[in-house]
Structure formats: structure tokens, C-alpha cells
Image (cartoon, rainbow, N blue to C red; front, side):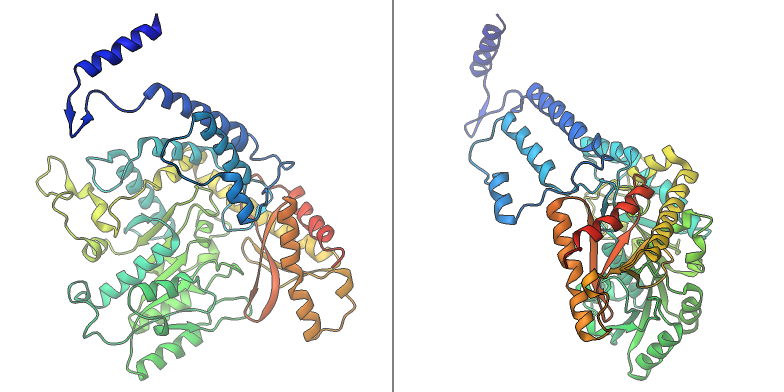
Amino acid sequence: MEASTCKQDVLQKKKNAVLVDGVILNGPITDSKAGEKFVEEACKIIMEEIIQKADDVTEKVCEWRAPETLKKILDLEMRDTGESHQKLLQLCQDVIQYSVKTNHPRFFNQLYAGIDYYSLVARFITEALNPSVYTYEVSPVFLLVEEAVIKKMIEFIGWEEGDGIFNPGGSVSNMYAMNLARYKFCPEIKEKGLSGLPRLVLFTSEECHYSMKKAASFLGIGTENVYFVKTDERGKMIPEELEKQVQRARKEGSAPFLVCATAGTTVLGAFDPLDKIADICEKHDLWLHVDASWGGSALISRKHRRLLHGIQRADSVAWNPHKMLLAGIQCCALLVKDNSGLLKKCYSAKAAYLFQQDKFYDVSYDTGDKSIQCSRRPDAFKFWLMWKALGTTGLEERVNRALALARYLVEEIKKREGFQLLLEPEYANVCFWYIPPSLRKMEDGPEFWQKLHRVAPVVKERMMKKGSMMLGYQPNQGKVNFFRQVVISPQVSREDMDFLLDEIELLAKDL
């Protein structure tokens, strides 16, 4: 009976069909019921294979396959006809199986890790609603949320007022800040371009994020005009060296306009001395930007916010809640002390089809013209929902626990033979070498360091092929390859710290 009714409906539609260019326009072309069923079944897979396994240490962190092998497994070819839902669900299973489980308690590879369930739900909501945050008329809730989150973040920096915008990554926030500083230095550049400008120079530390060079290249400033300031043995910018570099640039006839300090360097987790750097910026009338993408979340902790002492003197700050606070990639804010509309003046294009001034509501809420983007994701929402769930005290607890676990790991490293710290960390970056038994009696010389340099890559390969954990390594400032353990996830325990050291010993025992 049901099949007969469906057939009659199809025949009736064909009979009443409206055709344009040979295309039937009656009714939708998607099967909503089938689509809903697919979403339901896919969500079940997500729940069972990702969320419920997130804190299970018996699961593998990754299921390593070489690129050519993985291409065959995934069947990446896109065809003229669509695949069945059963095939698509199997593809979803395969994607999950062969992806790195960044929410695994033993994923220590990057400056993000773990899972926050409230942030995750917020991402589900925004993906389902598919909003774009540029005008109040199409994104009323998310614009108000972003405004509230930016206001709260500004309070933690220590400014009485300010402005800001969420961006797709800390690298973009740093680029925004560089362009904003240049616009403040010479506003005519927005319309007249680079011709006729003096040679602009900016300063940042040897340990800065590589996005500073990329931004200088992208903005036409040029990488040769990024002056890298020497750092001390802990990776902190040396203020006296900054002063020398500024004076050098002036003598060369260049025009210094920006200093970028770092609060939490990528490798060593170093915090530049912001107060002393701010003194130099004030003396020479330079814009001070602080890249606190990694270290900014220490501001939430009353115990550890001292690491960013002096940040309130900055003109702009990049801060990524998707790192230490687990707001989910990506969640990155550029915060600006200026509240005179500098962001909008710098970036606005006044598109008449979006930012009409005769709308029926307060158009000051149409904040999209502060961005270089048109379409923009509501990234502040996941941070907001998580903050509402945990409260400031819950976020503070995350920071404090991560740094306490890092301190525990440091003390365990000191007790174990073969492990050697590069330096005492002040944040969640724990950098160390593992010296296998075969190298422990060797003289300290070029051959020793050459052999030690090869240890970390081999251990990394073995842990990934085994799937037991993921841990980063790198050389840095003349030092041979060393491990960088980053503690973030609230799912991580003391036992995971012990496992990490045990596993390195096991994987390197024959090296």
C-alpha cells in the first residue's frame, strides 16, 4: 500500500511538473528522510568510535599507514554516481580508524590535545546551523557571544577597554597585528599602497613563531626587514639586544614600527620580559604586539599569570583558547587595546550589499567589516559554552593541573638514568634528551652529539608504528634533536607521564 502511494505521488509530480531548461522544479531534490537517517547512523559511529574511546589508553593513538597504502584503503576517487549510504558509513569508519586520535590521553605531539565535551557540542551546533559571522541579521546569537567573550578576555589582559576579533589561527592574528601596526604608523598605505614608504622594520625574537616571517612576506614588508633579537639560554628575548637592534635600524635610515614579543614560545615555552620590552617600545614609539597564542591561557590562573607580567602594556595580543584551554581547533582571538575603531578603519571595505547603514537595527553589531574575511566561523561560541559550563575556576584548574603534571614529569626525568633536561621549564613544555645505554659511556664530543641526534627520530617512528603514543622532537638553536613533551589534556594522568618515560626506554633500548 505504501509503495503504491509513493508511486502515485511520483506520477502526480511528473504530471504537474514545471520544467526550466529541462530541469523539473517541483519539490526538493534531496531525500530528507534518508539524509536524517544517515546523520543519525554517522553520529552513532562518532559517539562509539571517537567520544566513548577518547580516554581509553588501551586504544591506539594512531594506526600508521604509508601514504600510498592509505590512498588505496580510503578509495579517494570521486565518481560520476554517488556511493551508497552503507559505503559512506564505512568510509566514515575508515577515516576515524586511520586518523590520529588527538583526544587520546597519550597524544603529546602538538600544542593542542584532549577533548572538551561542551566545546564539542558547540561545534556540532554551529556545524548544523552553518552560520557566517559578519552581520547581526544572519548571525545574531554568535555576534553577541563573540562580543561577550572578547570583553571577558580583554579583562584578563588588564585593559579597561578594547576591541578584538576571532580569526582562523594564531598565524592570522599575528598578521592582523602586523598590518594594524603598519596602518597606525602610516594610514595612507591602505589606499596608496607601498610605493613611497620608507623601509619598514619590525623586531621579534629568535624563538618567535614562524608566522612572523610569513606575515612580513605576505604583507610586502619583506623577510629581510624582520630583525631577529637574540635570546638568552632560556629562549627569552634580551631587552638590551632589542635596544641595539632598534638603534641599528634607525642608523640605517629604516623606519621601525613594531615589536612582537612572545608569551610562550613554541619549542621551549619561554616568556619574553614584557615590562622591559614595553619600556623600549614606549621610548621609541613602537607598537607592541604580544603573541600569546600558546601562553595566553596562563592569564586565567592566579598562580601562573605572573608569567605574562606587563602584558597590559601591549597594544595587541594574540591568544588561542584552543590550545591550553581545549576550546577546539580553531579558536583564536586578536585583542586590541585601541577602542577608537582602529580595526575597522584598517580593514573595512564597506561592502554595500552587506553593511547597509539604513538597516532597521543598530548596525554597530555588524562587526564583519573588521575582518579581512567575508565568511567567518563562530569560533567564540565553543569557548563561550565551555566557559559557561566550567566557569573561570574550572578553566583555571585546567591550567594549574597541566603545569603541575609538567612539574611532576620534570622531577621524574631527574630521577631516571639516561634522561637529561635541556632546561627547567616555566610552562608546560618539557624538553629533554634520552641517552640510550650504548651512548652513556661515550665522551662528550661531536660523535656523541651526532649519534644522539639520530635517537629521537627512530623512537618517534617506532612509537607511531606501534600506536602507543605521539611525542614531538626537533633540533633548536644549535642543539641536536630532543623530545618536547607538552602537557595539556585534562584526560592525562600521572600514570601517563610514567608511561611516557617507560615507553621511550623500551623503544630505544637497542639504539
